[in-house]
Length: 317
Image (cartoon, rainbow, N blue to C red; front, top):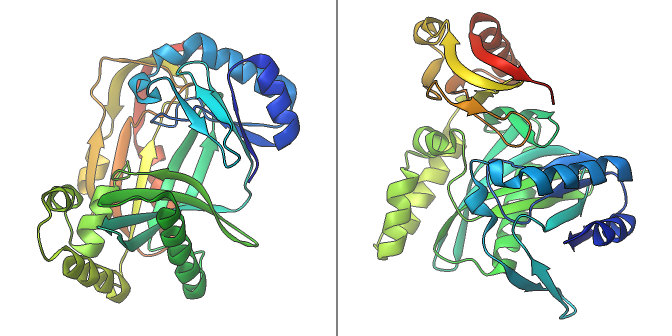
Protein backbone atom coordinates (compact mmCIF):
# COMPACT_ATOMS: atom_id res chain seq x y z
CA UNK A 1 0.00 0.00 0.00
CA UNK A 2 1.57 3.36 -1.00
CA UNK A 3 2.19 5.90 1.75
CA UNK A 4 4.03 9.15 2.47
CA UNK A 5 5.00 10.99 5.67
CA UNK A 6 4.76 14.75 5.12
CA UNK A 7 5.81 17.72 7.25
CA UNK A 8 4.83 20.68 5.07
CA UNK A 9 2.48 21.56 2.23
CA UNK A 10 5.06 21.01 -0.51
CA UNK A 11 5.84 17.50 0.77
CA UNK A 12 2.10 16.94 1.13
CA UNK A 13 1.48 17.76 -2.53
CA UNK A 14 4.38 15.60 -3.71
CA UNK A 15 3.33 12.72 -1.44
CA UNK A 16 -0.28 12.87 -2.61
CA UNK A 17 0.84 12.79 -6.24
CA UNK A 18 2.79 9.58 -5.50
CA UNK A 19 0.08 7.90 -3.41
CA UNK A 20 -2.84 8.92 -5.63
CA UNK A 21 -6.45 9.76 -4.82
CA UNK A 22 -8.56 8.85 -2.98
CA UNK A 23 -6.28 8.64 0.04
CA UNK A 24 -6.44 8.66 3.82
CA UNK A 25 -4.70 11.49 5.67
CA UNK A 26 -4.07 11.10 9.40
CA UNK A 27 -1.46 11.75 12.11
CA UNK A 28 1.09 8.90 12.16
CA UNK A 29 0.41 8.49 15.90
CA UNK A 30 -2.70 9.36 17.88
CA UNK A 31 -5.97 8.23 19.37
CA UNK A 32 -9.76 8.66 19.14
CA UNK A 33 -9.55 8.74 15.33
CA UNK A 34 -8.43 12.38 15.55
CA UNK A 35 -7.89 14.19 12.25
CA UNK A 36 -8.49 11.20 9.99
CA UNK A 37 -10.01 12.06 6.62
CA UNK A 38 -10.60 10.43 3.26
CA UNK A 39 -9.52 12.99 0.64
CA UNK A 40 -10.53 12.76 -3.01
CA UNK A 41 -8.51 15.68 -4.37
CA UNK A 42 -5.82 18.21 -3.55
CA UNK A 43 -8.25 20.88 -2.35
CA UNK A 44 -9.72 18.53 0.28
CA UNK A 45 -6.28 17.39 1.39
CA UNK A 46 -4.85 20.90 1.66
CA UNK A 47 -7.89 22.05 3.66
CA UNK A 48 -7.62 19.05 6.00
CA UNK A 49 -3.91 19.67 6.58
CA UNK A 50 -4.58 23.33 7.39
CA UNK A 51 -7.29 22.20 9.82
CA UNK A 52 -4.82 19.81 11.46
CA UNK A 53 -2.08 22.44 11.77
CA UNK A 54 -4.39 24.99 13.36
CA UNK A 55 -6.42 22.75 15.69
CA UNK A 56 -4.29 19.69 16.51
CA UNK A 57 -3.71 20.89 20.06
CA UNK A 58 -7.45 20.95 20.76
CA UNK A 59 -7.80 17.17 20.50
CA UNK A 60 -8.55 15.47 23.80
CA UNK A 61 -5.84 12.90 23.07
CA UNK A 62 -3.24 15.30 21.67
CA UNK A 63 -0.64 13.75 23.97
CA UNK A 64 -0.98 10.59 21.87
CA UNK A 65 0.80 12.29 18.94
CA UNK A 66 4.02 11.14 20.59
CA UNK A 67 7.40 12.84 20.47
CA UNK A 68 9.65 14.01 17.67
CA UNK A 69 11.79 11.25 16.17
CA UNK A 70 12.98 9.84 12.86
CA UNK A 71 11.60 6.78 11.09
CA UNK A 72 13.65 4.76 8.57
CA UNK A 73 12.00 3.36 5.45
CA UNK A 74 12.91 0.05 3.82
CA UNK A 75 15.61 1.81 1.77
CA UNK A 76 17.25 3.24 4.88
CA UNK A 77 16.14 6.83 4.31
CA UNK A 78 15.18 8.76 7.44
CA UNK A 79 11.81 10.51 7.75
CA UNK A 80 11.08 13.02 10.50
CA UNK A 81 7.97 12.73 12.63
CA UNK A 82 7.04 16.11 14.10
CA UNK A 83 3.94 15.97 16.35
CA UNK A 84 1.37 18.52 15.27
CA UNK A 85 2.96 18.94 11.84
CA UNK A 86 3.56 15.49 10.38
CA UNK A 87 0.70 13.86 8.50
CA UNK A 88 0.65 10.34 7.06
CA UNK A 89 -0.88 9.70 3.64
CA UNK A 90 -2.05 6.19 2.78
CA UNK A 91 -3.66 4.73 -0.30
CA UNK A 92 -7.37 4.24 0.29
CA UNK A 93 -8.44 0.61 0.81
CA UNK A 94 -11.90 -0.45 -0.35
CA UNK A 95 -13.71 -3.24 1.45
CA UNK A 96 -15.43 -4.27 4.68
CA UNK A 97 -13.53 -3.05 7.73
CA UNK A 98 -12.90 -5.10 10.83
CA UNK A 99 -10.49 -5.80 13.64
CA UNK A 100 -8.73 -8.83 15.04
CA UNK A 101 -8.21 -8.81 18.79
CA UNK A 102 -4.92 -10.62 19.36
CA UNK A 103 -2.82 -11.67 22.32
CA UNK A 104 0.89 -12.39 22.01
CA UNK A 105 2.48 -14.60 24.65
CA UNK A 106 6.23 -14.36 24.21
CA UNK A 107 6.35 -14.75 20.44
CA UNK A 108 3.26 -16.99 20.13
CA UNK A 109 0.39 -15.04 18.53
CA UNK A 110 -3.26 -15.83 19.31
CA UNK A 111 -5.72 -14.13 16.87
CA UNK A 112 -8.55 -14.50 19.34
CA UNK A 113 -11.65 -12.84 17.89
CA UNK A 114 -12.80 -10.83 14.87
CA UNK A 115 -15.10 -7.80 14.99
CA UNK A 116 -16.86 -6.56 11.85
CA UNK A 117 -17.66 -2.87 11.47
CA UNK A 118 -21.22 -2.69 10.17
CA UNK A 119 -21.49 1.10 9.98
CA UNK A 120 -18.89 3.86 9.54
CA UNK A 121 -19.54 7.57 9.01
CA UNK A 122 -17.16 10.29 7.87
CA UNK A 123 -16.97 13.75 9.40
CA UNK A 124 -14.88 16.77 8.50
CA UNK A 125 -11.85 15.54 10.41
CA UNK A 126 -12.62 12.07 11.72
CA UNK A 127 -14.11 8.69 10.84
CA UNK A 128 -16.65 7.29 13.30
CA UNK A 129 -17.40 3.65 14.09
CA UNK A 130 -21.14 3.52 14.73
CA UNK A 131 -21.93 -0.19 14.83
CA UNK A 132 -19.94 -3.43 15.08
CA UNK A 133 -20.79 -7.11 15.41
CA UNK A 134 -18.90 -10.15 16.65
CA UNK A 135 -18.53 -12.80 15.40
CA UNK A 136 -18.51 -11.24 11.90
CA UNK A 137 -21.40 -11.96 9.55
CA UNK A 138 -19.97 -10.91 6.16
CA UNK A 139 -16.92 -13.19 6.11
CA UNK A 140 -16.95 -16.91 5.35
CA UNK A 141 -15.12 -19.30 7.67
CA UNK A 142 -12.34 -19.57 5.07
CA UNK A 143 -12.06 -15.78 4.97
CA UNK A 144 -11.97 -15.63 8.77
CA UNK A 145 -9.11 -18.12 8.79
CA UNK A 146 -7.34 -16.04 6.13
CA UNK A 147 -7.84 -12.91 8.26
CA UNK A 148 -6.44 -14.60 11.38
CA UNK A 149 -3.38 -15.90 9.54
CA UNK A 150 -2.80 -12.49 7.95
CA UNK A 151 -2.91 -10.81 11.37
CA UNK A 152 -0.40 -13.35 12.70
CA UNK A 153 1.93 -12.75 9.74
CA UNK A 154 1.77 -8.97 10.16
CA UNK A 155 2.38 -9.05 13.91
CA UNK A 156 5.27 -11.44 13.44
CA UNK A 157 6.75 -9.08 10.83
CA UNK A 158 6.73 -6.08 13.19
CA UNK A 159 8.18 -8.13 16.05
CA UNK A 160 5.65 -7.49 18.80
CA UNK A 161 5.94 -9.73 21.87
CA UNK A 162 3.93 -10.06 25.11
CA UNK A 163 1.13 -7.74 24.04
CA UNK A 164 -2.61 -7.34 23.64
CA UNK A 165 -3.17 -6.01 20.11
CA UNK A 166 -6.07 -4.33 18.32
CA UNK A 167 -5.34 -5.11 14.64
CA UNK A 168 -7.48 -3.20 12.11
CA UNK A 169 -7.92 -4.30 8.50
CA UNK A 170 -10.09 -4.07 5.43
CA UNK A 171 -11.14 -7.14 3.47
CA UNK A 172 -10.47 -6.53 -0.23
CA UNK A 173 -11.09 -8.74 -3.26
CA UNK A 174 -7.46 -9.85 -2.95
CA UNK A 175 -7.69 -10.56 0.77
CA UNK A 176 -7.20 -8.64 4.04
CA UNK A 177 -5.04 -5.49 4.09
CA UNK A 178 -3.77 -3.95 7.35
CA UNK A 179 -4.89 -0.47 8.35
CA UNK A 180 -3.41 -0.10 11.84
CA UNK A 181 -1.65 -2.16 14.48
CA UNK A 182 -2.47 -0.86 17.97
CA UNK A 183 -0.63 -2.63 20.84
CA UNK A 184 -3.47 -2.17 23.33
CA UNK A 185 -7.00 -3.31 24.09
CA UNK A 186 -9.38 -1.89 21.49
CA UNK A 187 -11.85 0.86 22.36
CA UNK A 188 -15.64 1.00 22.57
CA UNK A 189 -16.59 -2.40 24.08
CA UNK A 190 -13.77 -4.64 22.87
CA UNK A 191 -13.12 -5.43 26.53
CA UNK A 192 -16.68 -6.78 26.79
CA UNK A 193 -16.14 -8.90 23.67
CA UNK A 194 -13.18 -10.55 25.42
CA UNK A 195 -15.30 -11.07 28.51
CA UNK A 196 -18.55 -12.38 27.01
CA UNK A 197 -17.23 -14.28 24.00
CA UNK A 198 -13.99 -15.70 25.42
CA UNK A 199 -14.58 -15.42 29.20
CA UNK A 200 -11.34 -13.44 29.48
CA UNK A 201 -10.63 -10.19 31.34
CA UNK A 202 -8.18 -8.51 28.92
CA UNK A 203 -6.76 -6.15 31.55
CA UNK A 204 -5.99 -8.94 34.01
CA UNK A 205 -4.63 -10.95 31.09
CA UNK A 206 -2.21 -8.16 30.21
CA UNK A 207 -0.98 -7.97 33.79
CA UNK A 208 -0.42 -11.73 33.69
CA UNK A 209 1.58 -11.28 30.49
CA UNK A 210 3.78 -8.63 32.08
CA UNK A 211 4.33 -10.79 35.16
CA UNK A 212 5.12 -13.87 33.08
CA UNK A 213 2.50 -15.97 34.84
CA UNK A 214 1.98 -19.56 33.63
CA UNK A 215 -1.11 -20.94 31.93
CA UNK A 216 -1.86 -18.01 29.61
CA UNK A 217 -1.65 -20.02 26.38
CA UNK A 218 -4.06 -22.61 27.76
CA UNK A 219 -6.46 -19.85 28.84
CA UNK A 220 -6.36 -18.33 25.35
CA UNK A 221 -6.85 -21.70 23.65
CA UNK A 222 -9.90 -22.31 25.84
CA UNK A 223 -11.20 -18.82 25.01
CA UNK A 224 -10.79 -19.43 21.29
CA UNK A 225 -12.75 -22.67 21.60
CA UNK A 226 -15.57 -20.89 23.46
CA UNK A 227 -15.78 -18.34 20.64
CA UNK A 228 -15.90 -21.11 18.04
CA UNK A 229 -18.64 -22.97 19.94
CA UNK A 230 -20.78 -19.93 20.72
CA UNK A 231 -23.99 -19.39 18.78
CA UNK A 232 -24.56 -15.94 20.25
CA UNK A 233 -23.76 -12.67 18.47
CA UNK A 234 -22.91 -9.42 20.21
CA UNK A 235 -22.92 -5.84 19.00
CA UNK A 236 -21.23 -2.67 20.18
CA UNK A 237 -22.61 0.68 19.10
CA UNK A 238 -21.94 4.35 19.74
CA UNK A 239 -23.92 7.58 19.58
CA UNK A 240 -21.85 10.57 18.49
CA UNK A 241 -22.65 14.31 18.45
CA UNK A 242 -24.22 15.60 15.24
CA UNK A 243 -22.47 18.95 15.71
CA UNK A 244 -20.13 20.71 18.12
CA UNK A 245 -21.44 22.29 21.32
CA UNK A 246 -21.90 21.91 25.06
CA UNK A 247 -23.12 18.44 25.99
CA UNK A 248 -25.99 18.61 28.49
CA UNK A 249 -26.96 14.95 28.62
CA UNK A 250 -29.30 12.41 27.01
CA UNK A 251 -33.03 12.05 27.54
CA UNK A 252 -34.79 8.68 27.37
CA UNK A 253 -32.12 6.52 28.99
CA UNK A 254 -34.88 4.36 30.51
CA UNK A 255 -35.22 2.80 27.03
CA UNK A 256 -31.83 1.14 27.53
CA UNK A 257 -32.71 -0.03 31.04
CA UNK A 258 -35.92 -1.61 29.76
CA UNK A 259 -34.35 -3.28 26.71
CA UNK A 260 -33.31 -6.86 27.52
CA UNK A 261 -30.86 -6.90 24.60
CA UNK A 262 -28.73 -4.10 26.10
CA UNK A 263 -26.23 -5.70 28.46
CA UNK A 264 -24.15 -2.67 29.32
CA UNK A 265 -23.91 1.02 28.47
CA UNK A 266 -21.98 4.13 29.46
CA UNK A 267 -22.76 7.80 28.93
CA UNK A 268 -20.24 10.62 28.72
CA UNK A 269 -20.44 13.00 31.66
CA UNK A 270 -22.51 16.07 30.91
CA UNK A 271 -21.06 19.56 31.10
CA UNK A 272 -18.17 19.48 28.64
CA UNK A 273 -17.71 21.19 25.28
CA UNK A 274 -17.56 18.76 22.37
CA UNK A 275 -15.71 19.44 19.12
CA UNK A 276 -17.42 16.98 16.80
CA UNK A 277 -15.20 17.72 13.80
CA UNK A 278 -11.77 16.57 14.97
CA UNK A 279 -12.16 13.29 16.89
CA UNK A 280 -14.64 10.70 18.09
CA UNK A 281 -16.67 11.36 21.24
CA UNK A 282 -18.78 8.54 22.65
CA UNK A 283 -21.77 10.44 24.02
CA UNK A 284 -23.16 6.96 24.58
CA UNK A 285 -21.78 3.49 24.00
CA UNK A 286 -23.71 0.23 24.30
CA UNK A 287 -22.93 -3.47 24.40
CA UNK A 288 -25.81 -5.68 23.35
CA UNK A 289 -26.84 -9.25 22.59
CA UNK A 290 -28.22 -9.57 19.04
CA UNK A 291 -29.46 -12.26 16.68
CA UNK A 292 -27.65 -11.09 13.55
CA UNK A 293 -26.52 -8.00 11.61
CA UNK A 294 -30.10 -6.98 10.76
CA UNK A 295 -31.01 -7.09 14.45
CA UNK A 296 -27.93 -5.01 15.29
CA UNK A 297 -28.94 -2.36 12.73
CA UNK A 298 -32.52 -2.33 14.05
CA UNK A 299 -31.32 -1.90 17.64
CA UNK A 300 -29.01 0.94 16.60
CA UNK A 301 -31.88 2.69 14.81
CA UNK A 302 -34.25 2.19 17.74
CA UNK A 303 -31.77 3.67 20.19
CA UNK A 304 -31.30 6.71 17.96
CA UNK A 305 -35.08 7.15 17.74
CA UNK A 306 -35.85 6.71 21.45
CA UNK A 307 -33.00 8.75 22.92
CA UNK A 308 -32.51 12.50 22.55
CA UNK A 309 -29.05 14.05 22.80
CA UNK A 310 -29.05 17.54 24.33
CA UNK A 311 -26.23 19.52 22.74
CA UNK A 312 -26.39 23.32 23.00
CA UNK A 313 -24.60 26.08 21.12
CA UNK A 314 -24.03 24.36 17.75
CA UNK A 315 -20.97 25.44 15.83
CA UNK A 316 -20.89 25.31 12.03
CA UNK A 317 -18.20 23.03 10.69
